[in-house]
Image 1 (spheres, rainbow, N blue to C red):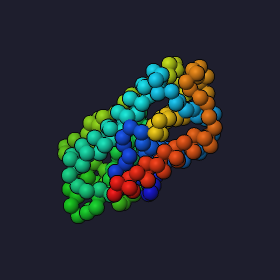
Image 2 (spheres, rainbow, N blue to C red):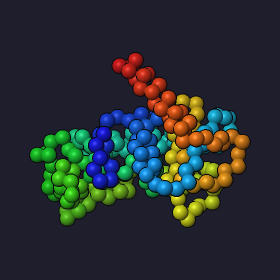
Image 3 (cartoon, rainbow, N blue to C red):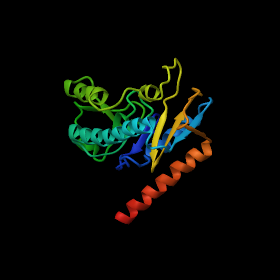
Length: 219
């Protein structure tokens, strides 16, 4: 996994289907753990409750959008890329991955009217807004991808929109949904079980390992 200032991630296919754990989630929590704040971890196991259903539908949609957004970028850009500069999903205002620039497999094929090298990271190309075609790509990356509102998780939990917050994280781990909040919002629900960060990570690791094992068997 490669990092460049914000986040650069290898453009390998992600586990973007319901019941999976995304590699992105592990990156997100490495970033979040550096923030000194009250961290709250929860799990929801009652698949029949409305909260579980809404969170499952929300996260499943986001994972699908991640794949669709990536396909749309490939079609729009028309060049093979190895990694990208941007922000990981669930840590953006649209709750999906934000793409800023790319490391292309063959830099010689890059059109300078569309792309220019990043000022700090020479291997990365970002849209060249001096030209119309570059501005079109830039606008597409900013506004042309699918995503949710950043506050949808707060809305689902019935939490009044806080003035200060960290982006919440929701993961579907087999039949369990785990949730991270950067603050204690006093969630009052019998279906929402507070857990430790250790249990939180164990649930995610177990789900990720199972997913990886199934993928290995299929291949």
